[in-house]
Image (tube, rainbow, N blue to C red; front, side):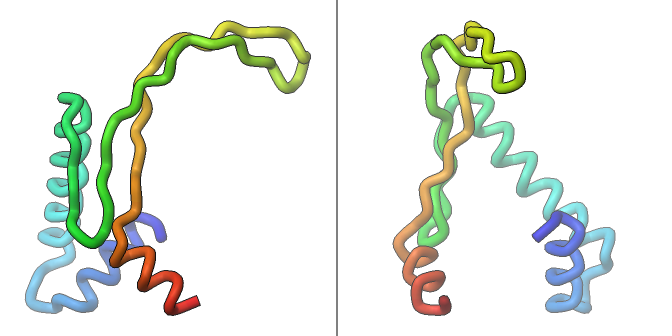
Length: 94
């Protein structure tokens, strides 16, 4: 689902809100999650999952086109762990 599709679904389910209001709410929620992760903190949405930041140490990688070895710098990457309720709903529906 794209951001625009999410906005359309939320607007359809909440006709008392304008489309612009829904866009603003989605933007605020995503920005809030992003800012929290930038600070190195964890965002937990009970039943849905948790966003966190993980450290990846430097390593040697390989360029898939040329096959040359390339040094990949250390970095922090976003990580998402699904919650039990979300896992259960997905497994029950498929």
